[in-house]
Image (cartoon, rainbow, N blue to C red; front, side, top):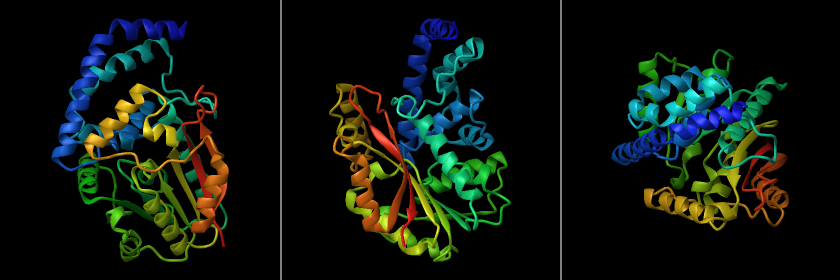
Amino acid sequence: MRLFTFLVIEVLLLPVSLIGCSLAVLWAIAISQQKQLSFTALSPLAGRWLLHQQGIRLDAATDSLVKHLPSVNGALSLMGLGPTLLATGISDYKLLSVPAPGSETLLTAITARTVFFDRALAQSLAEQPAVEQIVVLGAGFDTRLFTQCLDQNLALFEVDQLEIQQVKQQALQKSGVDLSEIHFVTVNFNQGDWEEKLIAAGFVRGRKTFFLWEGVTYYLTEAVVQRTLQKMADICGEGSSLAFDFFSWRLITGSDAWWLYLGVSLLDWLGEPFQFGIDTDKGAESQLSRVLLSAGFQLSELQLMGTAQPTGPFGGLVIARRHL
């Protein structure tokens, strides 16, 4: 009955949603291009914001960030997502409820990813001996350091491009979020010197570290992915761990469906093309193990997403440990 009520409201307000979402996306693309920001960084932010609005995963920092980002038009976003939030409130049906492992779809992938990385970070923080440093590579609009890691005697680092860091810091400062414990490290991953800048910002080589690398690998070349893994292994200490995600080769090429191909083509046009993927049809675990071992990590956990889908898994979530 809850799903039926939800669908009735969604269908009735579908024209409003379509117009609002379309205009909100066009606004986000235009502002992102103008300010040289990553458009794709908005997708996980939107997912976490919806989880917050539905009461599934409370995240006040994300809620504040959304309200102050120039690439997010509040009125258009409300027009596009308001009907969904209204339908959720009336029906109590959670559109982005956490999927069981293997049952993920592209719609629920960000929810699954968010929950997986929340757990990976929490496990790292609970370990003994204690983790000493947290590094979020390609941080984008992630807020975990502000919500889960403050006041714990940790060295906290966000690593990303200058433009996105400036916009993010300005938005969070307007929201009154405390940034004093965070070291913001400006890099260009394709230039290959990110670890030097990280160390210059206060990172101590050889200490136990947790690396979070969410939503990044598929936008890099295989060579850059391999080099980044090797550099992480080189600078971290015993017991360190890494959490990251990947897409399947079929997804990044858009070969499964015409609408996927259109999406991949749009990313190409935006200058954020998919480049790296794993062939999930030919033993993803063995491929990942080889890639990680050659870089100095050992596969600890792999959760393939979408194994129940007719076309098979479309990506995966990974935890790896420093291999000495």
